[in-house]
Image (cartoon, rainbow, N blue to C red; front, side):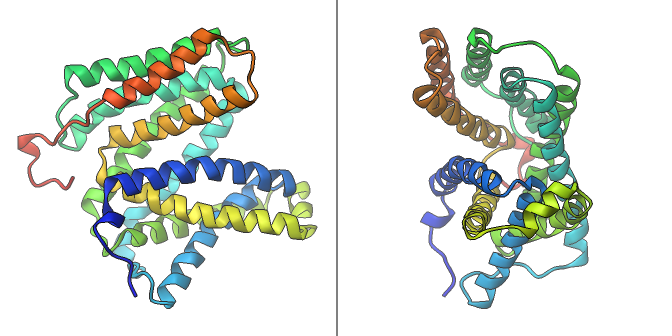
Length: 307
């Protein structure tokens, strides 16, 4: 039986699933890395494991992913390259800059992507209300960051490179959903994870001895944590592609920022007791800005472009 139905293809289902997976995958990955200190292998396992999940579900008749075709693979190859580049630059940015500095860069991306939406993807520019909301989102992030005791301006070089690649990622992947025709969303999941897993294999295979030793000495608890992260990774990939196909590049980026906001909020409530009341208000202002933001419609001269 193939999964179908209007609800499963709706925006609330896709966005809600994406946000839920984003939050739970973060916790799962932290546990997996704690029990199995081999981050490159864990990421590789998630990618290849997602491919295995798609193939298994296909064999059982639950889904119908697209078959591997040369032309589609060539179009999806940049997706894999940009995806891995974003992850690498994300790690390098956090290595050379603190979280607060990186947070400001991250929350300013919708401003750039909204213009790229107009230039490359046939969207209208945001309305005045939406521009104010985007600026409010950035202002709230800046307000929270500068009130944090750990705030320090540094690491601009890697953050700037990450910024460019991340914006490219958001625009190109939306372009792929618009132009590369797939029989189902699972096809995008299959192609992107399969192509990204290949180069990552050589990354962890040539990594330090510590990571290889951790893999050889994996215990049952680490295996369970790894299996859970693989399942969540597959779900995350599905919901991410589904939400990306239903939202504009700017709106999808904002949803990703909301996930970060919720993570920060949970951290403030549970552990970061020193956070000021002003900092908490800044986080709430960010959420309010997101709530009142309205996705820009397609331009009339962009008629014919898929939503």
